[in-house]
Image 1 (cartoon, one colour):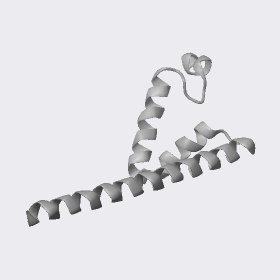
Image 2 (image 1 turned 180 degrees about the vertical axis):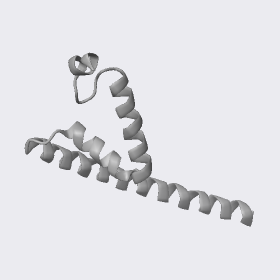
Image 3 (image 1 turned 180 degrees about the horizontal axis):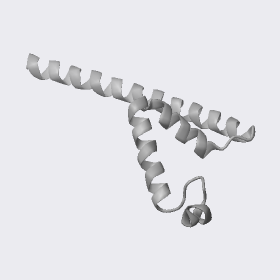
Amino acid sequence: MQLQTSAKDQLRTIVSRIERLEEEKAALSADLKEVYAEAKGNGFDVKALRKLISLRKQDDNKRREEEMILTTYLHALGMDAEGPEESEAA
């Protein structure tokens, strides 16, 4: 019987910790939403900010590699900085 009680106590503790963390996660999510709303209210593009945050999380080498691949693809489709008219004339 002692083993069952111990397992029940462990389960209760784990469930309690998970619930507390879920509450903290919800609070953080609300805080993030508020900061993004503030940024939007100040004229910042929220979609661009989210992308910026995502890029800052990446390893520099991985990010550069992805950017080079994207640039190559954009160039191949005539969507690079030159624009389609200039790249077709080249």
